[in-house]
Image 1 (cartoon, helix red, strand yellow):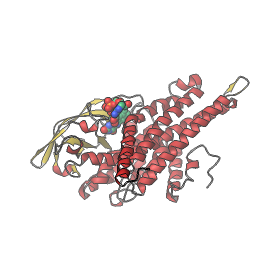
Image 2: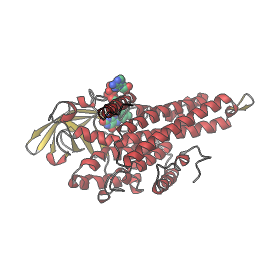
Image 3: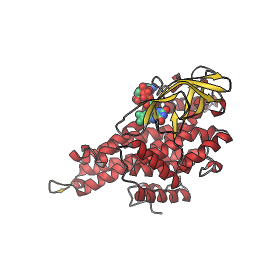
Image 4: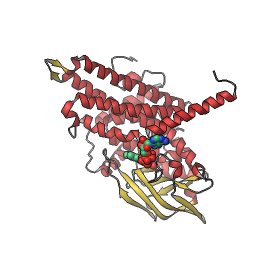
Length: 402
Ligand SMILES: Cc1cc2nc3c(=O)[nH]c(=O)nc-3n(C[C@H](O)[C@H](O)[C@H](O)COP(=O)(O)OP(=O)(O)OC[C@H]3O[C@@H](n4cnc5c(N)ncnc54)[C@H](O)[C@@H]3O)c2cc1C
């Protein structure tokens, strides 16, 4: 395999993070995207997302976000590198297609990781084949970055829990068939008093209180729970273990947000290169100017740095390592880096860069939220800083502080 003469994912596929199956997967999803994507209507994002989930399911791509072959997954555990390669490639072609795949994995991740046999049997096969849409309901109006401050309550009542409160910014809100909801059960204060539940969308007492419109539209809503009764059998994991389950889910999917950022950046790079090579000005082309070459070089450096961090985190997780620090580094670098790469591409296009509907203009809107959700950049910085201090304390306890 050649590692040179490419500006896209092909150059990274030669890296030792990947196994032959990943290279095959990358080729397969690229071919599928070329044949099937490029005409995603944003007029009715609900319908487009439903259709994309079905098509991704039929094509077999959703299986990679589900753990357990017996439950429709591709492997017994979620292959992080595969999910990242899928998201990087889908994002390069279509933000909505990436979103559709990502939400199936994120929305069902806690079931793959902590569900009972009955829960996995009931939900995962339908997630994997695209017949049930999943959502992950963690954030609240007063608990976003400070997620442990959540107040949506789940009160035990006989063989059920009764949920009251709000969740907001919930992707797939309004079109999901079920929501994995994190609620305060109160075993302990803060993060240790949170429990996860699977809540079917048609549960009485659960309503879509508000649809939220964002700069790169996708289905998004605020959910209101008023006395929503959820059977105890729908509890995910043990009482008080919900926060940990949410963080374990994010350790997988946070790295994949970084991979999606990389896909957006690669698309912008291709657009920017094409423009630099073709735009005539001052008797030569834009790409002939050293200022342009420096810009392109910076874009390429940012992309490769991001790719190395993304696939290091994905590879490490697939080896069974704790990747909280590495996933945070990947997300920080790849999402902030992609914003810079896309901004540079917009600049290369001049006026056309801000014309509604051009590829770089859409990418400019598409990337913005990735620096905020699944932990804003500042949250990733705190995670890394705290982890370093914890590691230093452990080293000190062993007498190793050099
Ligand atoms: C498009 C989109 C989709 C989303 N989808 C989902 C979903 O499916 N499920 C879900 O549960 N949530 C989802 N979210 C919510 C998302 O996770 C939250 O928006 C995010 O966690 C930030 O919370 P917040 O919006 O309340 O901002 P706040 O918590 O109010 O933070 C505001 C800003 O403060 C800064 N900040 C945060 N912490 C610190 C700190 N310690 N020090 C200094 N500065 C800090 C950051 O810059 C941050 O952007 C989504 C959000 C968006 C925009």
